[in-house]
Amino acid sequence: MIDNKNIEWYFNFMKSNGLIAEYWNYDGYLVDGDHIKILYIHKSGKRSSYRFLKEIVTQEIREAKLRKLFN
Image (cartoon, rainbow, N blue to C red):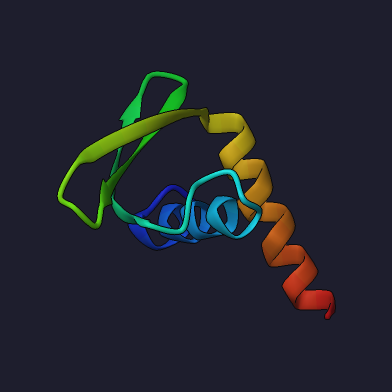
């Protein structure tokens, strides 16, 4: 469940919902205990990150995959 493809999907999901600005791009992730630190990069080269609870990220990914199955 926690792999680069799924975390990038979650980043884009957050971006599409307006929680991350459009000019940031996904740059990877780190697992930090019970958090996932999503790394992203600005078009100017500036780097930043945001920490999410691992439980919330995996739940969102799981629910999205279930919705996809039934749609």
